[in-house]
Amino acid sequence: MAKALIMDHPLIQHKISLLRDKNTGSKEFRELVSEVGMLMCYEATRDLPLKEVEIETPIATAKTKVISGRKLAFVPILRAGLGMVEGVLSLVPAAKIGHIGLYRDETTHMPVEYYCKLPADIEERDVIVLDPMLATGGSAIDAIKMIKKRNVKSIKFMCIIAAPEGLEALQKAHPDVPVYCASLDQRLDDQKYIVPGLGDAGDRIFGTK
Ligand code: URA
Image (cartoon, rainbow, N blue to C red; front, side, top):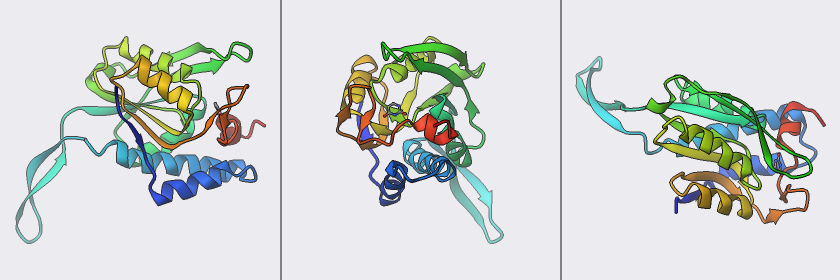
């Protein structure tokens, strides 16, 4: 079973409290989602391989390290995942971005695919899938299936808040995919919202409610 890493850095926890507050407006909410995405990306890229290079400083020759090996792609699940893109790109500006569009059917609560555009060379990249909320796990499971169909070998999933039900379902469906999340909340309610959660992340990012 892949590990789930709960990122409980004080800066992340503080920003999540602001995200949860129903009085936080769209502008601040959007900025916070991006900042939390950036802080989580810092941790999720901790295992990037390094290689040694020689560089001339103004003083001497230094043996020093740079990132080597495979390149990265981020794949936000539309639409709420878009909120994390700016933050992760601020750390890895050369990464490519794919998009997967899935919406939740309001009655069945099952994910329905409506868009998939991934970088042409995605199989040569390590992929981090982004969605601030891991609720039932349905969208994450389907998005990762779509990415695996493109022969991607290394996939990670990064969310801000997870429900235990979604985390379990995702780990069962994709035991090879490490999950990074910043808070494991209590449960889902009967509308499949995370409790206590932060409400509908997409609506709060884009001000649609
Ligand atoms: N998606 C959200 O945006 N919020 C939830 O609580 C569950 C799914």
